[in-house]
Length: 322
Image (tube, rainbow, N blue to C red; front, side):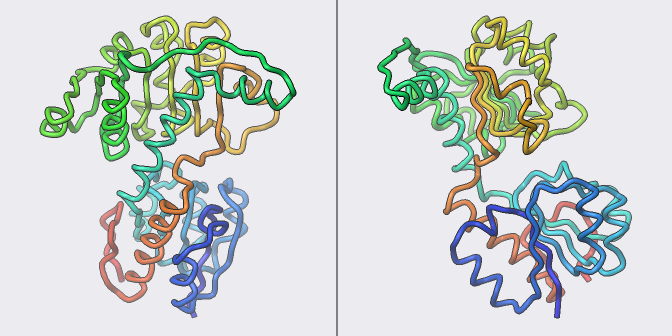
């Protein structure tokens, strides 16, 4: 019997057809509550044949400890920055993922954060709940410019919705889809600086890598318009936390909407949590019933196909399936 470790909480906590699919395989399932740091992962691996993982740390040390039994690593989702893919490849571990499962859900979450900030929703909800009737004046988003950094599946869905809200869209992506941009009336930026200079709203949808880590820092914030709003549904490490705190406190950044942080879950004294113009949600941008079922089904199917010696639906590295 194959033993499979599952760490992603949305998979485990959300009812749906993926639960029956998981049971139908007859695997022995071991569950843990992620995202887990390296130390916890070292305690869990070593006796499992496959892993359906979230944003746990899969360092070289963890992957080496998982061998020789671990056959496959199946990512629930699309971001693999917590996985040492080079080490997995060197060690002969195929890494699967599930592209195309959460772009609608995450794009909707972007506008939840954006509208909550400009309409000051958190303040108004809390004051009414406290028995008060205090009101602050917000802003419209129509007629403003949104800069999208990363025009992949999610970025494109954000652009479509932005046009429906009457926003002008400028975007930056290394792999530019000219046909989509022309169809949607999207202006192409040739650099991050063009996005910073042109936008009242900036939405982050890029991968985390050496070029994007701490991309939103004091130097680049200085290039932005006064009162800019920044939305981050990508990775927390793209934003330099201390610099964002300074920018929010000074008013240079009017609002920061984050579904991701540099520490997840954050400590109680995380500096962003006490700032009124910052809204943080607990990495739930893709946590809807519809999206969870799509992600989980593909993650299970990838593992199922691999155990049967077949090609998975999507693979990150070029390691043959045995």
